[in-house]
Length: 86
Image (cartoon, rainbow, N blue to C red; front, side):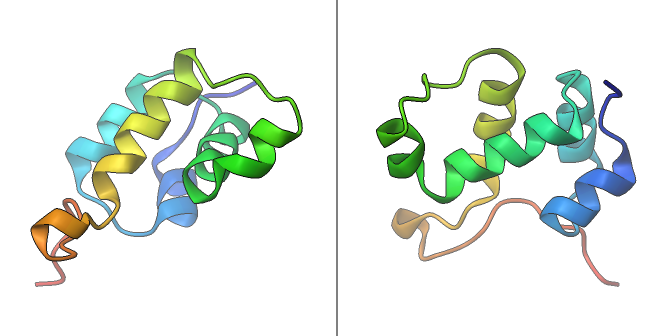
């Protein structure tokens, strides 16, 4: 079980800022835990219906970070911090 790397994060979630990457690495999570967190973010109903317990620990931490990257209806659909291209 190896901790997330910068390359794994970028491959999984796309270009994000260095602070977000550091936060994700700082959780101590693995690539498998990041995939689980993404599954919860995309649609939690099938996971709950399959009897999965609500996430805790590192997966919960990743969900909180990923949720900050999601567009929010209240702020006009603006996503969280991304790396600028210029």
